[in-house]
Length: 375
Length: 100
Image 1 (cartoon, rainbow over the protein chains, first blue to last red):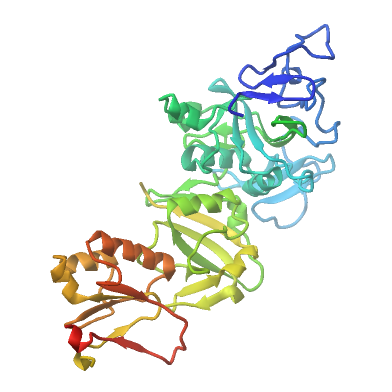
Image 2: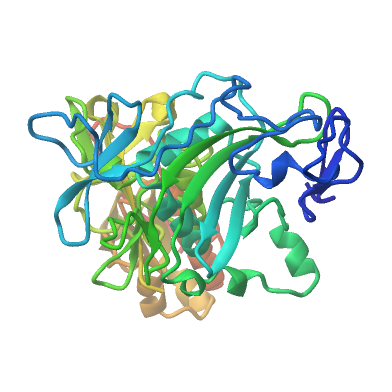
């Protein structure tokens, strides 16, 4: 990735130019033989370097929805829960979520189930395209995420751009993750720094305020031959407006951001999305809190809030408090709330303290919410 | 021989026991220790300060770092007491008289 190019079977693709270095073995009279993915990397993939195509038709599963956004044609009847995902008779996916006026509405997008069982790739690119005239096309690379994990994380977010913006610009999780760059141009954050350029101003949310997100996508980067390259992609959201908080939401009315500001001036992050953080938990689960450093909080973000991260705790034990208990001395400023089976909790030094043996790490956790203090 | 009058209660949940004489030896004010430990002592005597319980090994390690930053030496001046003991058992600590 640092060389700014991908090697395919037939030729090499320059990510910074968005073009191949050599001519296309299959040329067309209507386009340059150097053009990549038909000039449309959002809709098309070109894993071999020979001929772009619809990833769906190549059996790798990209989907784009239509322009309709008035809700499903055959909406389900009965009470709906925040975050309910529904696929209508046209195979369009909808999410039931609240807008800024507090009213629920169907939001188009979040098609995330088809790629779950594919072989684990080695890199995921998250794309936002056509952010109005504020910025043309942008992408973010997550070398540490596999596609299945990314889908798990972002499907929980329900309205993905919110999660993407929040993590990219507010939390900047992942020590090796590049920031948002122009589409197809993965400029390494560390490279920027090495050149004495602070990349942060490029990604200020305010720079995109009022811009509209037309389409977003998760794209896997992997090459069976050598290096990495676009292999398959998946639309995750369509439509949205970048709000003043640097989050994107559906339509002018907006939606709820997975990262929100608290009245105290701090921030709340939802690794699995806001809906997944507020829904019901399985029977016998109880809410607990853990007070950690910002570094440990990154681990909880990175694994998508699906389980207790490895490598934390001490002496084979992980200490937590009962939900709502005061912060114990000697702990970090970031509070992570989550739910675990009550059976994994053992008594600790105070009645409101508990310890979890490390063997409990593989148990699924729920309703992960991370509270960051005010700076 | 133990100075029975100087016994203090000790927490087995990552309790930290500090030799009071070390404070004067290292020129560390008691108030600075209290601030570093974020709490008043669980118990104290003429000889010892006892803190705890603490929130696991991570919190105990943090307190050790803070006390060391004040100039106190781990083991010579203070130590961490931890173990899995039945709840009916209490622990008390004191200074050996011939060490005073």
